[in-house]
Image (tube, rainbow, N blue to C red):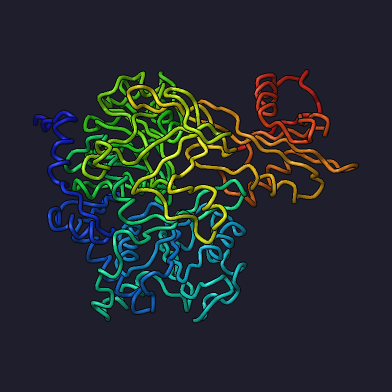
Amino acid sequence: MNAPEVLPPARRRAALVRDFTPWQPRTFDEQFDHAVTKFAERPYVISGDRIYTYADVQRHARRLADGLAALGIEPGDHVGLIVANHPEYAPIKLAIARVGAVAVPLNYLYRTRELGYVLRQSSCRALITMTSFRDMDYLTMLDELAPGWERPGKTSLGELEFVVTYAPDGTPRREGVLDLDDLERIGAECPGAAPGGRRGPDDISDILYTSGTTGSPKGVMLSHDGLHRAAFGSIHCRALGGGNRVVFALPCYHLFAYGQAVIGSIFVGGAMLPQPRFDPVEYFRAIETHRVTDVLAVPTMSVALVEHPDRHRYDLSSLRMMLSAAASAPTWLWERLRTELGVDELTTAYGMTEMSGTMSMTRPEDPVEALTATVGVQLPSGPAGLAHLGGLIAEYRVLDPVYGEEVPPGEVGELVARGPTTMKGYWQRPEETAAALRDGWFHTGDLVRILPDGSLVIAGRSKDLIKTGGELVTPKEVEDFLTALPGVSQGYVVGIPDERWGEVVAAFVVAEPEATVDAEDLIARCRAGLSRFKVPRHVFVVDVDAIPQTPTGKVQKFKLVSAAQQLIAAQSPSAPTTFTTIRGE
């Protein structure tokens, strides 16, 4: 049988423009309902051999929404969710939108301390959580954070009153605790309790937590319409075709998967195949079995796919597209994605949570040089963009990071942006909001230069955030954790460039006088108390004199980066004995 004809990107974009002009702002549940009118019997979620159509997900979501309303969840309430890439994610997310609540997707790698902080800070009134995931036991965490949380009424975790659980692995439920089946049953008994239409497109849809310069996660408030515009801008730039099928293992608490797959799919009647964990073989099986056309990945995943020895055992002929972003990738990787996996349409992108996701993106027609030298053009978004800017998703300026004046074209400065995708602010963080949002302009903290064709080149970060494997790590958070450990006097954390991970976390530690600090023990304690991606890959135990400082006593972290690179490259018996390197997972 001949493969179906693949239209060129320009014709696919024209179809998207035709279907969504003029732009109609909607809430997430309204946007999904609109998709159901066109794609009711198409698959929306595929998980293994289970296929859920748009109509299936809509029915499930409405019962869950009615259940939430019957429990007492009201428009504007915050509902947290700790849900990995399971098929339940989509109906839960839609149910929260339909009841008019604000979704607070939480990182399911949070340890107890991190989870407690975010649940309190976010003012969640309800929490929908897995019972466990990998080695994470969320019910035990709740026991530690809020003893007696199973009993009706307000807990000691801020505003939290209701907890609904579900066990993906089928383990027995805890007695007296509501689970998803209970919530659905309650909803079936109270049809119409959540009629929809109780919030507007400009109201807050999500509070997404991202690392901040203070070391504590900040809740970014994003509107329904802003998220939809950014997602549509991405699929418009990539020229997604009707019925696109995308596989991914990126978590849906990040905008990468949330915007590109969960939201993006509904504009084209597409299906998503979320994977609870990244496994190249599972990707290959999904592509072969379900004729997947599209892959979302970060470069570390892309490397694993092209290097896997079994890749040639599977029929990957349906695969046409890949978005590999969140870190830079070398030329050889892009070339091997074409030759080894047969991906014709490769794209990369740049974005920030505070701007609802994608801000720039390459096009599938672009040469490989654009993928390696830039992060694409300022996002052209068709009807979802700004008409007075020719459809760009936002207005961009590049400012001198010291004086705040616009720099000449082509020169490096801090990227600032404003438009309909700009965040509403940081939840209950007025000072940080005022610092980031000035006269409507969001200050990214990223240094860029804009080429004559509108492409962005990332020149560095004025902030110290470390991007490793698609995750953001705040150095101060790790430093605070290290310096709270016995025997540690000082801790300094930096990001070291790494071809596979983008950056890896490295820590320089100074022991207290007369104390002996064991680097391996520090790694073990970090693994126990921090999310996996925050654990330092390299630990250097040093004398205080080895920490470079300015005359005023400010640590020169750029010199620590250079020192770490030299020490990593010179691992040998002759390396300085004051430095101890321990490799993490």
